[in-house]
Amino acid sequence: MRLSDSIESFIKTLLTQEEPEVELKRNELAEYFGCAPSQINYVLATRFTLDDGYVIESRRGGGGYIRIVRVVHSGPQKLLYLIQERIGDTLTQAECNRMIAALQQEKLVTKEEAGIMCAAVNDTALSVPMPDTMKNALRAKVLKSMLTALARQDRSACPAAKEAEGK
Image: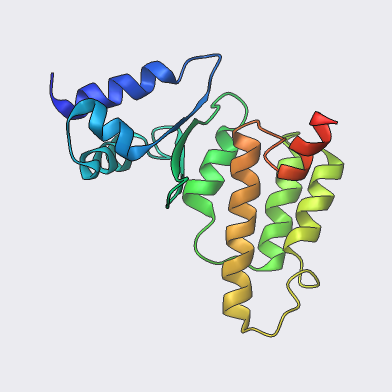
């Protein structure tokens, strides 16, 4: 078995049905497999893509990590399509509103969630002095982030929600 296959298999073993996400340290994983960290990057970039049903989050630095999340495919297939194919680098407010309305109609988001999503991407929320092209780019990133959280079915991705659960 090739090294890339071994690394992929190891990570997929960690991602079980009960644990749809795993947090790893790139250097520790490279040390475990006796390879360069760039080999880990290669495996992540080629075998754990959004097309393959995974979202990769990373933080660099001393406390850095790589989080690999297996995206749920049952109902949120639409969310994956939107993240991958429909939402480009920019979106207008009207385009966002249409997408969010469709998600609500398909019962992928509640009425309350749709309202919050619309509020987060509307022109009022983005009323900062910057060109419309930058606002539309920011709007696309915000919507992708919200859809990724929904696709993960991790409604507690927000640090404030996690703190509230702990109380």
